[in-house]
Length: 235
Image (cartoon, rainbow, N blue to C red; front, side, top):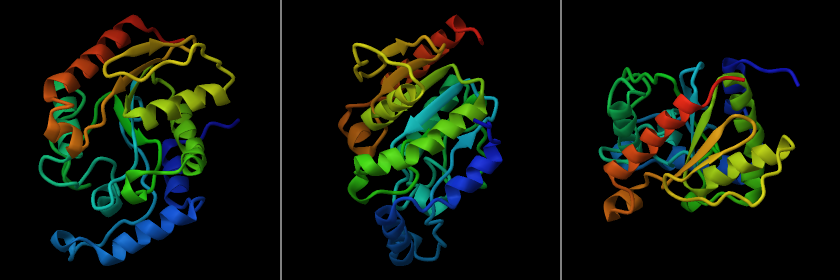
């Protein structure tokens, strides 16, 4: 298989129309808008990954937020002060992966160092619940990005859907892992392909507002990622 460039993969993701239900939903949200963003022009298209093309750390989220990345066109961006984007970026900033602790809009100056953020699903799903078929339709995009990045050694999965999406990629590539790795916060799994998968509770408002996920717990995940990167050497 020919390895594509990150820019070409981005173009292909933006033009994707494999999931009619998701495309229809994103377009409707872009027309109806939220009152706070009524003057904004919504992106309302599939959202590509974002970050350092030489990253060793890949972060896999669930999907764009309807009024966040579906509005701004950048993953974990624009879902409000204290939203999942700010929570994640603050943790990446503390860990040295981001140059600023917020993620408000695509032209805000945010830069990632040695990290790249993608998602299991590239279109905002109703109720944040994509179907198994929709997750499968999006899997080739994640696989293409992983191939293009080339240097990834650690994958942090934000939530079970991102965790399972990476395991599906392993299966597609003929890597059968038994017993199946279990999702757990800050629980790391090293694989024969030289990559380490680390689970993390998703930084949704529901999780952060209830204390299921705290800043300290998020830091624990990226400390584990740093440790894994010091142990793993390029093939």
